[in-house]
Structure formats: C-alpha cells, structure tokens
Image (tube, rainbow, N blue to C red; front, side, top):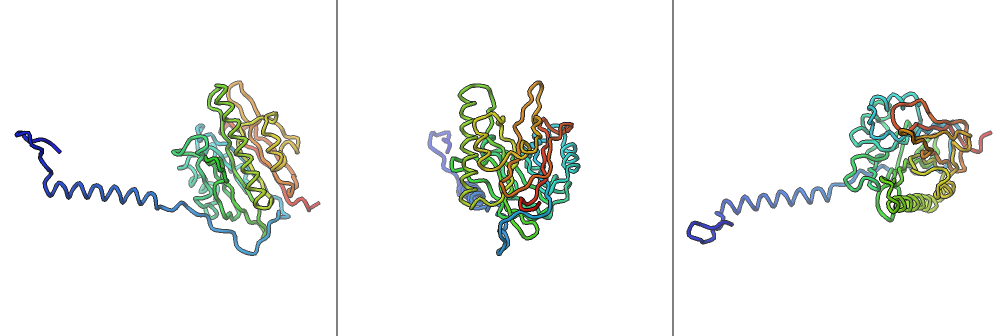
Length: 292
C-alpha cells in the first residue's frame, strides 16, 4: 500500500484487489501442479517370468560420456560401433537422452524412468545423470534405493528370451577437490551408496544382475571389496585391467562392470583409442553360467 499526498494510506481499488487475488490463485495453482505432477513410472515386468540368465550371449557397454563435452556426435558414433544389447551411461545431459535413444535405434524400449539424475553429485537441480538404453524390453526402472538420499544410479528389470534379470548404471559420489575432509566424506558416501545397492539386491533375493558405471575408486581403494560382494569385477576376471580414465597426466581405472555369479564371461575390453570422452568405454559379452 502507498500513502496519499495527505499522508493517509491509499487502499487498492476493487479492481486492484481482484488482480492481486488472480495472481495469487495462478501462482498457487502452478505450485500445486508442480507438486502433483507424477514422476514417470516404468511399467512392471509381465507376470509369470522367472529370474534367470539367457543362453544367448549379450553385450553390455558402459561409458561415462562426460556431458558430451567432446561432441555429441562422437559419443553416438562410439556407441554405435560398440553395438551393445545394453548401454549403461553416466554423466548424460538430460536433453541428450532421447537423441541417443533415437541414434541407437532403441526408442521402442526407452522409458523416461530409465534415466535418473545424479543428485548425489550435482544436487537436486542436476541436469545430468545415469541412463540405461537397451535393445530388449526394460521394466520397473527406478532410482537405486539410497536411504541417505541422493540418487546415484538407476536400475531396471530386463527381459530376454522369457528370462528376467537386473541391469544398473551408477555414478558414485566423487571428490570435487583435494581437500582431505571433502575427499574423506566422498569416500564414505561411495561406501554407503554401494552398500545400499548391495542391501537392496539382497532384499530382492540376489537375482542375476550386471552393474556398470563410474565408481570413482581405484581397485586398491577401500570399497573394492564391497564391489566384489555384489559381483565380480568382470574385466579383471578377463585380464583386461587397462586404465579407463585419462585426463592430462592422470591415468586410472575407475570404471567397472560387475556381474553376479549367474553369468559366464566370454569376452570384454577397454576401448583405449576412443576420443569421445576422458573416460574410455568398457564392455563385456556374457551368457548363462550354466552353458558350457
């Protein structure tokens, strides 16, 4: 309200009150709309299917694309060459997800819930995250349970040849500077995140599972044993332990694919000649462990 020249408070006219009321109503409706807007819910897996690993070989590709800073086309071309049945990606900008699904020809199996923002690293306003792209149907896609808060990955149920199994893409908490306390807190967060993944997997009955992602941890790190409680380090089991990350003079192995004991590893590797990201793509081919 304003004061008149006589010093008295000038009250808004009837029309002014109406305008103010309309503004408040519109703002309130917008807020309620945002609150009530449902998050995308992935369809459930068809009933009657049992957990198991298909007899046919399947290729799993894992790649931290680092926001496609070296070019979206370079990332898409690299993924096309690798031709994975399942593509587990990290640090993907949200507006790149649908484009990648289209370029790889997997829009028919893509669902918005297959993508989850990395709020554990970038906070609630994260514009990038983890995604699973697949040639095969995916169901029940959702954030990996993390009671401490902060989405660090996405997992889903895949169905191939009438058998279902879990696939997951993760990006564990990272230390963004070398300050000792910050680095220690990030390491503790990684331990919690991975422990929560293992606990959720156990509650589900330890179904067959493949997990790929950026663990921000060298094989000598403290959570490596926790990783092996979930699944074997597939590339190490194949003797392919090349560095997966290169930035300047820093070379390290921090990207992994973990496979539960239900899988028999056939092949795999690190694509060292890739220039699409500071991370090197990694891949494995696996099938049922019961097959000779």
